[in-house]
Length: 251
Image (tube, rainbow, N blue to C red; front, side):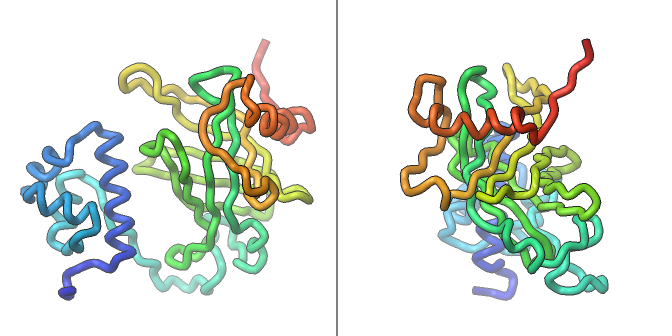
């Protein structure tokens, strides 16, 4: 590896961002390679992990996409290691370690009014940003998986999962975990309709620790008649019946 090659972790992160942007923009790899003045073979081998991105290659790709691909390094700004920055709540890692772990995320299906949709959300401490971070996986619409940071302000007592992608926000506001570990709340995001039309949408959401669901865990979209729906829908019902959240509309 030369001094200009990036680390395996950086390569993996950059590959993920590029794939997501290609899917979001409906751009082919060939079109990106042409715009970045790279050979298609070079781009595909780097995305497949068969060779490392070089700094020069990443710079060309950033110019072609019009966005940064490298994660900025945490700067020495007086923030104590193991303590989140003020904008995320100034929490210490030891104070929020009980939130860390893998969860099943349960929410309503946007395409089926009677169905539910489930995927995995992992919450871990990220040393680079000195804060909790989350990452989604096991989504059947993998191109729309989200990641971001976790805010835990002392004032409200709620937990915020925040994605900020070039100024486009998506947020889940969650309760503190119950005695059995679930976090109930509200998701605010954008729903992809016909063509490229995006529509604001909000829905109850629940994060359930995977450890409490046993070994038989399925992810995906489940209709009202399925066994998974019967098993998991009570979590969503509890979100509004207890209530952990209020849905208010004018009459």
